[in-house]
Image (cartoon, rainbow, N blue to C red; front, side, top):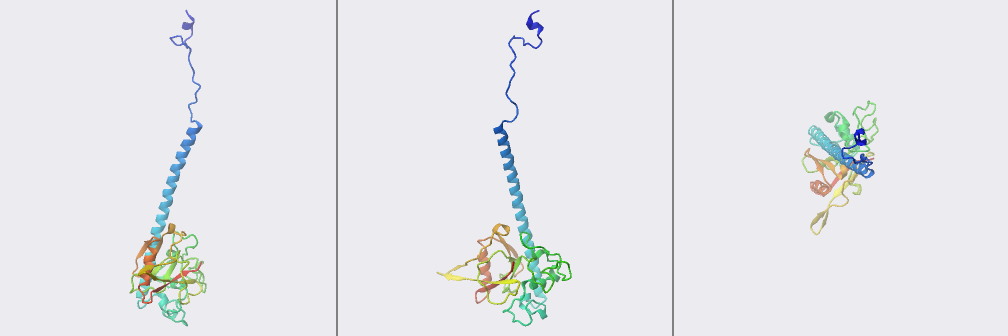
Length: 267
């Protein structure tokens, strides 16, 4: 018997067997490519989740605006078609009894406290995308952490929204309430807005028969530079930066003196 016959492992042709020494796993470059793809896909997923979160917060804020607008209109219907800043405290409003309506707003916190029966709970007075304010669970001054703090406190830590001082239910396009992250450079308005409010005025300038708004824009604090405004007709709108001057101008045009005051909660 030949040596080939005695070796069962030898090939029939008599040629020696070649054993490959090449590795069959991932190369370093291949592994890096796979990791890059995985991280890219993960980033895309996180980006979609973040956009979904921002959109959900914006939709929720629109809902808050509708609740607040409806509450103010119900309150107004029960108080001779006037909002709280148009009535003295003795008549259920927020203007101090010793002050003249129109010259004093009262406390913005008290203006929203007037809505306790209409809103029931004050959680909707904090924008879902507000990184600073804290939702309060109760208007009850005896609660552990009531909206605005325990009276006579007028804290704004539970309030994200503005109040349109010159809003009138008969002038539907005036700003009634909405997000407060705009107007930091607007001039002060005439009148006393109390300890808790900042009174700003919006007006218009005529240049070559064109209407131009100045110092009006949303900051990036909420909704990625978009905001929510509620009008005196009870509607609530998502407003882009380019639309904000248009909404404010519509408010200005509701008044013969072409000035519209908005009260912002102090930080």
